[in-house]
Length: 441
Image (cartoon, rainbow, N blue to C red):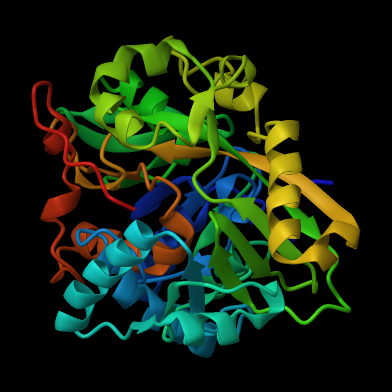
């Protein structure tokens, strides 16, 4: 069974003109369109498949500050408040709640890393508390294990990946914006070198402002514009088990395992960081810049197979605007989960919580996580194409910081004071020869 997702009806008629066109109706594009619509702009959100159909519905659902890279932490902090505000303002249900996130470990170096991060985070006002062995063991009593230590980030929480992005899309339409599914953006038109329109499979929308939030498709789309964006996707697998009779927390991390309660009462299980890298020509093109990241994370990342190549999202080809593109051939990236990872995930979680071994598996799925060489997203204007803003490469962190990222993009697009400093997210940090500062988390 695939990842749960609530489907919505979208706007039937494509507008001939819009103040801004947002490409990609995942969590980043949808929140961007929402904040632009709130500011009174005529917004068209276009999606080649379905709203939230790719990684935005296939993730853990964690909305956290804990263990965020310091470049992302300000955005994560803002995002938590915005998750709450969105529910109040829109009346839509995203499943967001500040349940707190709970981590335990028997690895002293891991505990020390958490403590070091906590010292920094508390210095800027983030609430996080280290747990000693007794506290961690008591709080994690459902594991029936003794733990050396842990951390509790009480202000963090979760949202439901199956509900959240469709809820934002409905809110956009309630504000007068339009949402278009099964409508691929083939490219852009320019006048005098600046954006003047978006060419879609259903027609052209005249606009002077385009925001691309296409996730795993971003690099291949930017290639059509002559813009170099180093990106590689990793394939991660996840499963859900029915746990109705068990007393489990909303969110828990231990022994590289995560457990998250979903809105349907099941719990999603994941093996943190474990991923497959499917070789593609795009990956080979950018592999030199990804070497520092893979050196740091080599224990959990391993070579994959041909799924990435077959999916077509990392193609090096150029496509014509008057013919179907690879995005129309593959509306939704829906890779097969890795059977070995699913088995290991169940085995490892079952060692912590033996009852899980007897729980029914109610779903398994995988997703392509779009990554940058340093694990931090790119958010900002593209000088080579005036009127074009890129927001991609969220490296598995996009769901939780989605509202903050969308607000930041809307700030940049409208020339307002940015919600956080946008400089750490500039694309130019990946210019050939630049040093790569890999995120620790």
